[in-house]
Image 1 (cartoon, rainbow, N blue to C red):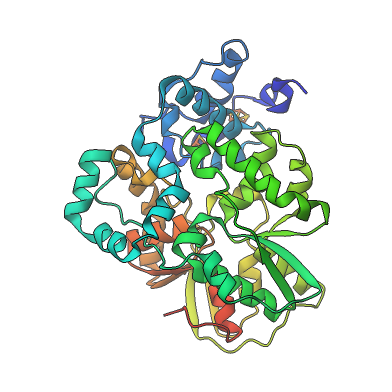
Image 2 (cartoon, rainbow, N blue to C red; image 1 turned 120 degrees about the horizontal axis):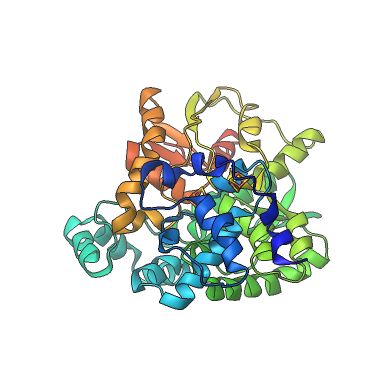
Length: 404
Ligand code: SF4
Ligand code: SF4
């Protein structure tokens, strides 16, 4: 297939719907927008790959443009490739390389998590990081766990079962919220499903978002090597992070044209989609305890882009005493590393304002959302406690007490 057909470039009817759905273009004129950076310039890039507008670096890779496009144009794939070309030519600042190398940051932080977490809360150190690296001193930094998910998994191996899935935890669960991964393993075991894990690399989304496509492809290759035997054996590959899901389901095929990407895409499934199938087959355990819990629900942009609906809400609606209020307020604005960058912090907060207001207006002090970065941003913007929906389900089964 040639590039024009593959990206559905000729389908663009210039309706500008993508522009009206772009959260960045809505709040700043520093970004030329998805249509201009995407299909408009892509025509020139067919001849000259470096026809890239510098404002491309303001694209947050949220994918809302692509979800909204009525003609199926692969706008964000165009934008990711264009950003890749721009970075390959102009280089990426050290700050972007650091923020995109989530594994490097995680491996460093776990050497002395207490010190790193303390330092991240001290304004003086954050101001120093702002001066040296251009990392916003105003943004809340993620807290690191003392043990990674993989270490905790090895200490808490689930019981062997005939029904098995592979779990791709992603970096935020690995380094920052391993309790989310453990909750997933326990919920699956409670339903008779054994969760297997491998030490995967970062899915690559933070690298893609920063235009570091060669590094992202390298990660994709490593992950594919580890996943291959499970793909061939027909295992389902479960995720709890929407961005990892999107990378495995779509980016490995669309951006990197990887062998077996098509089969991987068929076998990747969000954990709540998996539980939804169990429920439809009458196989989901419903021995829930009453929880008396009212939460707001935020749908991450990348879950929208995956196109699996909101399976977590459907499952949590089965739990007595749980009331899930859909916040329906658009992008949180953080978009991985985007909102940590000094020049983008204000844009990120402006995008998230509607969501923060929705949480505050409804008087909610607990919110659930699948994406770790959305969790961080909502807590930053509202002070609410924010959880992954799997933690609520684990609590309902009496398997954990993460919910405060
Ligand atoms: S890319 Fe899609 S949404 Fe954007 S102008 Fe073209 S057809 Fe419209
Ligand atoms: S990916 Fe998001 S920020 Fe980038 S052009 Fe599309 S809607 Fe705008």
